[in-house]
Amino acid sequence: ETGVTQTPRHLVMGMTNKKSLKCEQHLGHNAMYWYKQSAKKPLELMFVYSLEERVENNSVPSRFSPECPNSSHLFLHLHTLQPEDSALYLCASSQDLAGGLGTQYFGPGTRLLVL
Amino acid sequence: AQSVTQLGSHVSVSEGALVLLRCNYSSSVPPYLFWYVQYPNQGLQLLLKYTSAATLVKGINGFEAEFKKSETSFHLTKPSAHMSDAAEYFCAVSDPSNNAGNMLTFGGGTRLMVKP
Image (cartoon, rainbow over all chains, first blue to last red):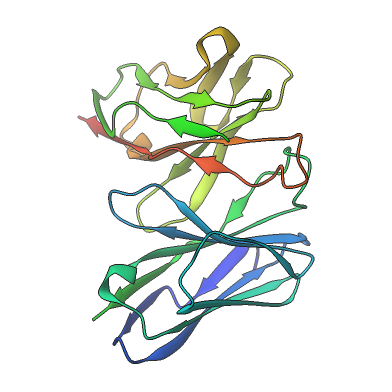
């Protein structure tokens, strides 16, 4: 595997379910990101991790719970979601968090549908 | 605080015609600027980036963008559109002066449609 991978690619869940999204980067990067992409809304940054520590949480509801066990893996745990949480969830990584020169590399996303 | 505005959520051009996608930014410091492309059912891919070297930046697939500080713009162009260019394009800005300079602020995106 190369680049940034995400599993599953598609997920349908009920509002009472618990599920997890997984992201893995094979680039040796130190920073990882979760974004939410909804129809007709700009990309929303949800969480940022640098060296496995969370550095940004943009007022995301607690029904979304991130986990970064190591610099290569990032999870997004989902529970009691709402239909408006249906979206494409994108994971990205960059070499570091600082500097500004770091390109973010994106995974293909997980298309989530909450019924 | 930074912000990015992309004028036109949808742009339609004929195959072979000039592509112009507009991006204006607001930033209190000289920013770094990026264009990403998203093809259907895929993640975002970097097209090009401006990081304070040459103001005219060339990217992949024949795209280029020019940084104009006086106009706070970073418009994306391609001389001749191909059908394969149909995608959504995102302009983004980062602040290299802070400790989280690789965090990006994205514009709302422009969907490019190419007519045969």
